[in-house]
Each structure stands twice: as structure tokens, then as C-alpha cells.
Amino acid sequence: MANADTPMGLIPIRHRNGAAYNGAVNHYYIPAGYATALFIGDPVVKTGTANTAGVEGTNGSMFAAGTLPEINKATAGDGNALTGVIVSFHATKTNLSTTNSPASTEGVALVCDDPDVEFEIQEDDAGSALAATVVGLNANLIFTHAGSTTTGRSGVELDGVGDPPAADASNQLTIQRLANRQKNAIGANAKWVVKINNHTEAHGAAGI
Image 1 (cartoon, rainbow, N blue to C red):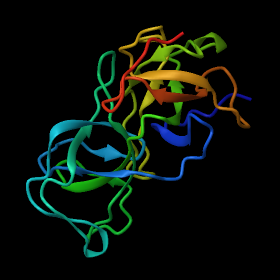
Image 2: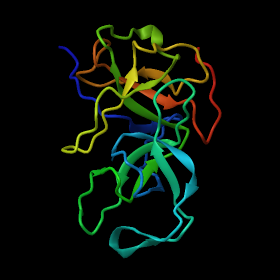
Image 3: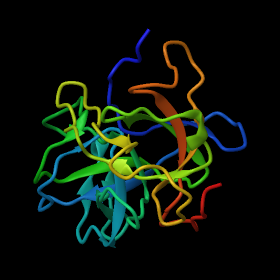
């Protein structure tokens, strides 16, 4: 049976030591002037600044000025570092079930930014699926698909052809293994387990 074509961004699944991912996140700021929509599963990167005024969170909580590092959606491709992956968003007074952050809208994202977490991601095969020999190599992201305002899921994928996996320490990801679950096999639209290699909070290394 062919793999389902379901782009989903990056989904945290476990720590590299085998421990289950427990949902740990840090809060990050999305400024109102940022004209790009963000979705669950989107990779993000710190901009080097923080919120300059207080920001209201869920249930009336407040984040004081300077407590929320600012993020943008990461740039796909070699040499572009990642800080983490969006897991969810703080609800707002006008949207209590926030599944995405619309463009040009202030918000607070909950981000998995632990360098030791592994993620599941779908490959963008572009007509030529990856083989088992890519395990251990580095890879980059590709933004072929937009995120879904219906599901809130990212459309980000692993670039399998345009910039094929290689032993390159400046690549964004390292491929750990094929995701071991039902209805997933090597071939078009396969789901792979990866870790962030070019991480703002850690040092990358060339793949094997």
C-alpha cells in the first residue's frame, strides 16, 4: 500500500535517549508586524530580540516585557539554523481554540526547542523516493506546501530531491531512521525520524 501524502511539518516524538517526549516547551513571541502565518509543526528561529511590552497569555496570564524571545518561521535550506518547532499556540480572547497564528497578528507560540528531541516528518520525494541508505545523512527542509487553516498543521517537509541528503554539517536535519509504524514504508511520502542538526542551541555535525 502506498504511503499517504500528508505533509505535517515536524512532530516531536521522543528524546534521543529513548525517553518519551513529555510535551515540554518554551514560550516565544510572534509580533503583530510579522506578515507570515505560522502553523503547528513549523520550524522557527529566534530573531535576536524579545517582546518590548507586556503580552497577555491564556486565562489572563501576562508575560512581562523581555520574557518572550521573538521568532520567525525558519528559512529552508543549507546553513539556516533552527531554534525549534511550534507545538501549539496560546489561545486569545477572540479565538479560544487557536490552531494557527494568522499573518500580522500578535501571538505566543509554544515551541519544542530541546536539541535532543527527535521529530517525525514526511519526505518531499518529487518523483524520486529516498532509500534506506539516507539514514545517518543530513538533510534540509522544503516549503512546497502551505499550512492548513483547517487542521492547523504545517506543510513543511524533508527535501529529498531538490537538495538531496548528504554528509553536510551545515544541513538543518539529521535522518535517524524510517518511522517504524503501520502504513509507512520506504517509498514516496515516507515518514522519517530526524533530529535538528543546525540548532541555535547546540552544535551541528556532519552526517555519516
